[in-house]
Image 1 (cartoon, rainbow, N blue to C red):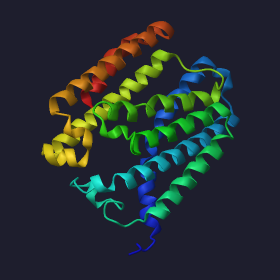
Image 2 (cartoon, rainbow, N blue to C red):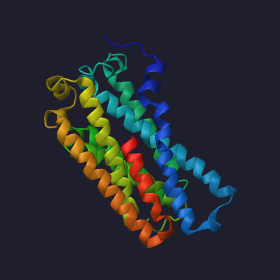
Image 3 (cartoon, helix red, strand yellow):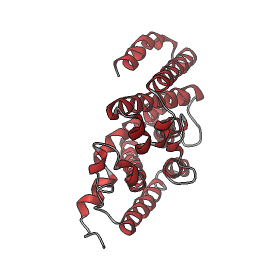
Length: 258
């Protein structure tokens, strides 16, 4: 039986309320400005706003496909079972139309910035497919679920950087810092979610990787990601801004606080 079309549910699965997560593009933009401060002007700020809109649309494309393909699993989650897809309030045809429109718009707008920025937007969209779509579906694999999702962090750094310096890439130490920092956040999120469900069999039905995770290996992996992020942040600071190396304890405190 066809599901009545209600726009609010399709907007909900695109999760515009999660666009704030794209704030992680800003450090890449700021880092590029650090290397080329003379680039700052009103035209650049206008480019930045257009770029952010393209990134937000690509994120919504990924959220759309994520929620649709997770519907059968979200039914086992005490909260996510109420999402529009899991509750049967959206229809496949319109979901894929929405995904295609968001994907096309994000690429079209990104091309207004430069080819390298557009390439990173496409990479963000491809990672959404790798993460969600079978047979790859990396979110079902232990550790790969965290590492593949958090690779969106260095991609956002590259996106911010490419607005100003499209023909170069940021220091690799900062890219790894961003990746490991994101992996830490994802691992702790998984740890909290695993404890919230508080039932290994239900947790495994909801998220396949939870069948292989335990509280112990989730927490230990988070320690590894945090230590790696801090180490590579130190490498970056010693090489480029050694006067800020005393900020490392503050970074360590942020990991502990989170």
